[in-house]
Amino acid sequence: MADLRINLAGISSPNPFWLASAPPTNTGYQVQRAFEAGWGGAVWKTLGDPIINTSSRFAAVHFNGQRVAGFNNIELITDRPLEVNLKEIYETKKRFPNHAVVVSLMVEPNREKWHEIVKKVEAVGVDGLELNFGCPHGMAERGMGSASGQQPDLVEAQTMWAKEAAQTPVIVKLTPNITDITATAKAAVRGGADAISLINTINSLAGVDLDTWNTIPHVGGKGAHGGYCGPAVKPIALNMVAECARNAQVNVPISGIGGVSNWRDAVEFMLMGATGVQVCTAAMHHGFSIVEDMIDGLNNYLDEKGLQSVTELIGRSVPRYSDWGDLDLNYHVVARIHEENCIVCNKCHIACEDTSHQCIERLTTDDGRAYLKVREEDCVGCNLCSIVCPVEDAISMVEIPSGELPMSWNQRQKAIASVGDSNEAPGGANKEAV
Amino acid sequence: MSAYQEFMEEKEKLDAYISRQFRIHSVVENLSGTTIELVHPGGESAVLQLLSADARKYMSNLVVKQLASSGWNDAG
Ligand SMILES: Cc1cc2nc3c(=O)[nH]c(=O)nc-3n(C[C@H](O)[C@H](O)[C@H](O)COP(=O)(O)O)c2cc1C
Image (cartoon, rainbow over all chains, first blue to last red; front, top):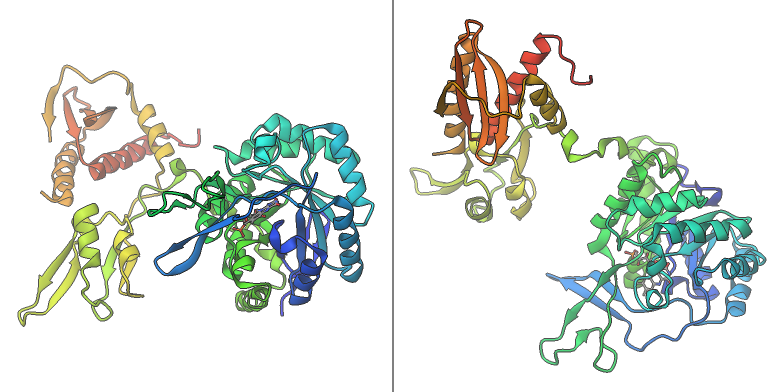
């Protein structure tokens, strides 16, 4: 069995599965039950001046039979006094000394306020702090959360203020509601962050009720934008983690968050540079016990891969993540339909004919049997047919060696610029349109 | 016409010049595709307009090879 322990900027935990700061980590009762269930760490529900929440807070997007493909909330930070939380944090850490107890914080962008809360929270014995610069609703209207997390200068300054008082590692939690996540990640690093975590929730409106015309959710007939999370946001989160991981100026460990629902998602985040992951929606949907399958699955995967420690996964796919301009234009795949598995449902033919390159033909054998065939020479290798195909292993994408050396767009442009004066239209010769 | 046939027709024309020792002298890209000027060591020149994506890619590979044969290094 592989070693599942991780160490994120000095915060160690028995496994890489942490609960994210959210309703599952609202109280000591919950966090302690989560640790009993197997979670390796928890980021306590964000502390700050206690708020008042609305009733009706959550909504979900169910998609084609999958419940909670996406989750939307308009909940704010903790509504309980600091002292109540601190007492429970102290008790939790005492009972679970080897688990990671990290506490999420949010106060106004004011140096004294940051010093005050950091000192009070650290006094009860925590393993680290997470600065919540991400909450996109409610708190942002008060100048906190994503409102301050969208401004690199405020991220830097607040990180610095927290660091001035902090004795434990400081994780800066980033908002995805920004064009370039590395701008704020770099600001956090400049401010002295020991690690970053991402993503918090994405600005969203879950839906509109077609009968009542109310927003979903609504509070007595009125709605406000919320934050989106759950499986639907995973690709966005994964890209943001990877963009930070491959940026040399973001040279701190990363805690990956956003749509992690099982061990596979966790492995993907770790391969893309995360040291560990945090989970909210999946725990809210299925309960704390999902961590058992996560631990088992991860263990089996590491054994199959012959890895001794989960930390060997960290960042292994990062060198494979690049810019479009560095991709090889000579790499070529084509679709191949395996007749023995094909049910001739026609999905690939329709998709290719209507929305791609018209290279899948529907043919009929002499004895009247319909079958589908790819005209490989016209196939651009877009993958669409294999995506829409409902049958496993009916279509595979096969590499066709081009016989050419790799050539990226950037290399091509450089070569063309070098071949001669490419700015002037050639003249004086017979022009032949071919 | 299939995209492949379109490419093959453009490729054949380009190959014909290359087999006659023409070298790609300049490349201009615009909304209409890529216009290349080919020059023969004897001074003769010709212009081809390449429309298909595969032909424009093929031409780029020829340019890279042509430059490599004259000692060009894309890392430079
Ligand atoms: C109901 C709810 C409340 C949340 N509250 C907080 C919070 O107080 N502090 C915080 O940093 N993030 C909060 N989050 C964001 C989560 O910690 C996490 O970043 C986000 O949900 C993405 O992870 P997921 O896809 O696993 O849910 C909250 C999320 C939800 C759904």
